Length: 80
Image (tube, rainbow, N blue to C red; front, side, top):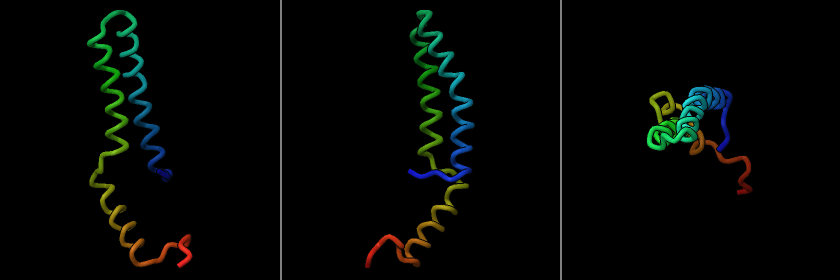
């Protein structure tokens, strides 16, 4: 899915927060603390999934406008 500048920055910030958590989890896994390590890795993955797939109140107006423009204006790529 194509991202705008704001979406790319949001993903970068989420990765910046999730990466240390994942590294901490990997460190725990390497030292033998499997439950705690797996929990930290799962939490980091969950952070990324929530950022990607969760619709926030800020996303709703953009999605509504995108759908409205799609119904009013014809698609430029469509040969009809």
